[in-house]
Image (cartoon, rainbow, N blue to C red):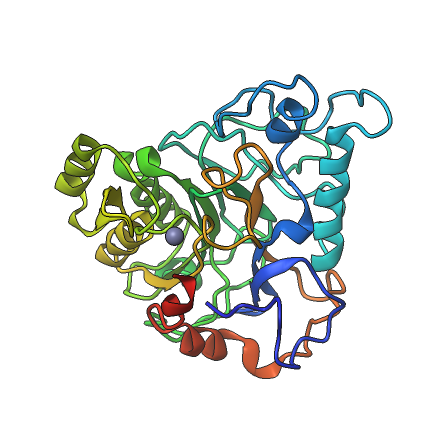
Length: 345
Ligand SMILES: [Zn+2]
């Protein structure tokens, strides 16, 4: 994926705290934040600096990622998380508090968007993937080494023929596979080792198709964001054996010769086997300090992968309409498979 943090002149927005951002379809935002966006997870801030308990990197920690908890006073880490979340929303033109987050529990559970963001929902649902049938719910997934996977899709021909839930006829040609705009369902998924092996990605794709995403190859596109790479993610030998038995593409060895799992490669293999077009970030969270990494720096924070399709005329992203070639084509073309992998070590 293209790294937009140090753009070559095309980026007109004031330094937005994104490692990657693209507009692959009409009104469609796909973004991954960097450390400059701040920690975006309540459960991390709620542990570190408050109780003093090591965070242990558990994205499964309870404590909720919804809003509604009372602030504990000035300088409360929760207030900082709220401010950071609003900052990202402002940068993208999303109404404050409207982004939907989950309480992530390393499950394979997919839930539909609730239609309410973190600002109004007292507690986020426990699940590890979110699907927006219309694509109009801003969805976020939090990570720090686990894989953030963001999805967008074209509507199926059947769904296209019908009038959409919002009362508008869908714009997409017959046999739209490969050519129509990405105006179908969107999704985000949190795929750590367990979720990946338990089928979170398959479940997400299945749910998207049930909600109207096309079944043709390329009708669903996925962005695998920055995650710990196969040269860094050391696991016990037995764990590598088990993982590899299930998804052979995960087999890996660290740069220091220990057994490892390559989760991004595994996710790519799973998604491609389902006919999903994959865009994969070459960036490793453990090796790149622009991102939070649990293994490098436990408990410091979480960044997010986000997808949102704004209504026509909705939002006022500073970049909207100003980027020309950085849409679908530019993005796909510049990613290659792992073009800049070499620089990641
Ligand atoms: Zn790495």
